[in-house]
Image (cartoon, rainbow, N blue to C red):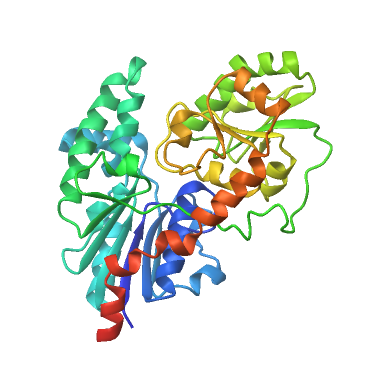
Length: 380
């Protein structure tokens, strides 16, 4: 059997946020075709213990709790002339785990997920670098206000690193064409969605008694999400409620920051982590993605489309999605009110588009050839 090493900046279990959803489905795809050894970081001590159902998919499994502080990472980066993003994920334990697995198993290919993990790529075998997004462009977009200098530095150094890595791997993957064009040699490996799970006809616990809802779904300690909901609640929601007084704004997602929690009130619901976002999506009259900064394909938009909800997305949030006009692209209270007044059958059309265009099997099919799985399996 073919051995593949899978490197991830965040353990791919459970698949409950954007990066984990992509990494989990890639890992599952590969594990159905090869013996996959996982080396990954955990954000918390609790994430170090991989659940047995996920562990059964794997060969070797090493999960390291990432404890390096931001201050230490910044100091190391400044001393070494490196991006802070790389210093933050530079860990001797992970280097040792990679060397150990490569020494004991005939690893024929390595799949590295997220640019921070490129520093661990072995020198031999096929090497696939899944950048997902061009992070350097994200930092360039952040370069404003008092953090302008460190963000410009990060964008410059990380951009150079991304180009260097892309030139020295077998495939440099990005989630959308817009991202892939930012790095020479970039190729597209799109996100998919499980349309059997995200289906308004599937069994899930409904959300009731909340009235008419305009909803945002996302990880609520992620800066672009925080900026989006704060701006929407303060600048757009009052105008929406001037025309639709019964509408409330639901912010659904784990780890809301202090700024997000402060929005909660009569017109704003802040749920924190919920066991299943599908109930909130199904209860929504409109799902919004008013992101000012967005990289790649937004899973939150695909999930809302799959649940047959009318979606209003900013140009940035919609950029990576081949939606064929089944969502509205725009910003402002007028656009929200227009969808509340007349959803125009967008929800069912959006679901049909996702089913036809974004299944995971189709999205990940190109990986077999990139990793040489067919030829490697034949040789085995």
